Length: 180
Image (cartoon, rainbow, N blue to C red; front, side, top):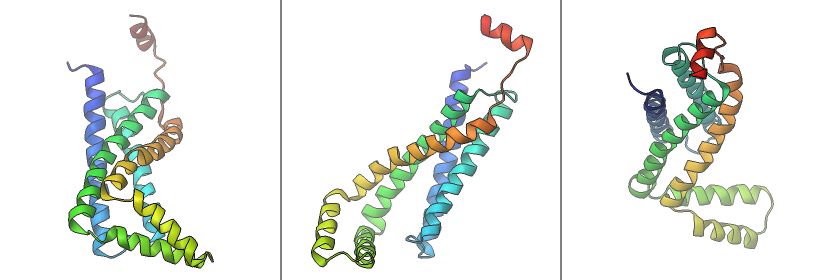
C-alpha cells in the first residue's frame, strides 16, 4: 500500500495540474474572445479557484481519507493544489507573452495610461509611472510574480474553505491509530 504522504502529494499535484489546464483553457478563451482586460474576467478566475479548491479537497477527503480530514490537512491540500496549478499557469503566461502575443505588455501599458488619465494625473506623472513599470514588466517577471501571488490568494481561500470542509475522525479506532 502506498504511503499516505505519497498519496497526498500525488493527488494534490494531479488536482493542481487539472486546475492549471483549466486556467490555460480559460485564458485562451478570453484571448480568443478579446476579453483579456475585462474586470469580471479576473473575478471569474477567483471563482474558478474557489470551486477547484473545494472540489479537490472534498474529493481527497471523501476518496482518500475515507470522509475525514483535519483543518490543517485541508488547508495544506488546497495550497498545494493552487501552487502546482500556478506553475503551469506561469509557464503558459511566459510562453504566451514571449512568443504568441508579444504586444500584450504594450497593450497593458496603454490600458494603464488610460486608467491614470481617467484619475486625472498629469502627463508627466503618467509617463513616469509607465516608465517605472516598464522596468519590471517582462514575460518572465510577470510569470514569476504570478506564482507567489496566486499561491497566496489560494492560501487565503483555503483558510476559509477548510473551515467548511474539515471533518475530524473521532472514532475509537482512529484515536488508537494515533497512539501507535
